[in-house]
Image 1 (cartoon, rainbow, N blue to C red):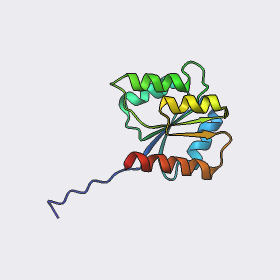
Image 2 (cartoon, one colour; image 1 turned 30 degrees about the vertical axis):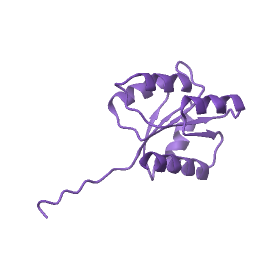
Image 3 (tube, one colour; image 1 turned 135 degrees about the vertical axis):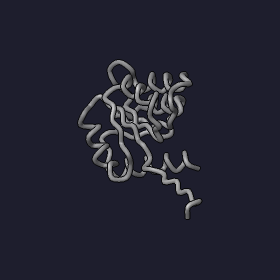
Length: 133
């Protein structure tokens, strides 16, 4: 037993980025029992978190003041000092143009607000399963 090394993997870390506090609280409420959910009210704060925190998945609003979701993804991908993670865009806009832009940006998913608990849990689990495969 002395030579047995047990490595326990903690809960996956989800970073939710949204300028609306209610959206962040909702995500935390739905995912908090299953995942380590970190919250950021804007893209700048989220980028700062990525400098020092391992994140397994990012739930990212597209339209935010300052740094948009698309700008955030571009910044994350262009900076080697930032921890990288798959992104699911979470937005109230379902236009075909935005869906196409999200795909081109490399998003692994797209969730339309308002969403149900089931949809959020299913999309997060699917994205994490793909990441771990």
